[in-house]
Image 1 (spheres, one colour):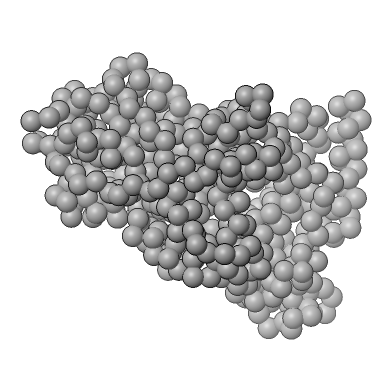
Image 2 (cartoon, rainbow, N blue to C red):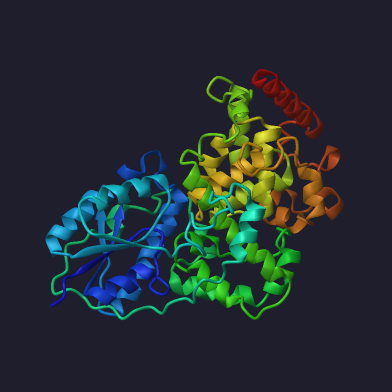
Length: 463
């Protein structure tokens, strides 16, 4: 009988268009394995919301595998060590995996490749990170020319079918998923997640099918938080329950600016990986050196700053659209993209709190928390990144709320304001502000002036 082949799963929890499964199935019996590697991830262990999604995604994948008489093997520990141990137990001839670009996964791949035959495939992005280069052969650092060049290379291939899988003669031992305790214990802070999300490959394709029916209006509706106008595919793409190639293919034959806009956002995922391939510390180190001189408020020494941070985290800033976004994030593990920008700008520029603190909060609370996207997006808003907005572009939450018609969104997530009329809900000041709703942490004009003064101080120090 052919030698068993291990498929090492990470953020690629699907059977269709999964090149590692296809390569392994062509070589012999398949042993699918997921290793929960908290030690290897170091400070980048999965956040609470990610653990919730992972539990349900692994459970859904196991059901799919069982339909083919297969199992999902679960191990916990350092990935390279566990996979070497598993290969010894099973006599596996090779380990097949989709290539990953997060620093801790690159470290694990390097460690493993020195001990076993590691067969890495591309498959989590439209184009292999590092393959889109300038005429001089360098990696891009600006999105627009990157996207223009990438578009000339797409589509590269069609999605591949899920392969038939053959089980090994003997299955190795596996942990029980429930013993990992990925789900929160009492109190269940994730109670609202289940009503909002269904994890797994089948759910991902159902969501894609629903999205393509209204993708024509995507460009018009994606910035309106009160409307369900976004794809809601981000967690499915992050966990690899569906591939971007499958999404790209599903949009073929559909016209309109909505298709092009959404495709540009798929390319932003690729661009984010392109950035972290160049800068491994992008999640905690500002690309622009002068921001090392920025006078961020220090929450460890400044009780007022610490109180402001807690108010932001809990959705009690006194700015309705900011509070709606932060409460939505806590209750369902996701936030509308336009509101992500508004809430991030508020933390950085209204409260003068270091962007890395906000990035870590999103890492812990988002079901789609992605190392590349999260760090690139936060640095973009902060003005610190390689491709970035200007720090001096300070979003005005009140006018943003009105501009993007967020009234019903605020009513949904900030019930204290539900009875306010449209003309007051964006800016409930004075007598119309309910007593249960907090005052603003800082007036907008004062916050803007303080932020610009801090920016000038940084420039003077940086020289």
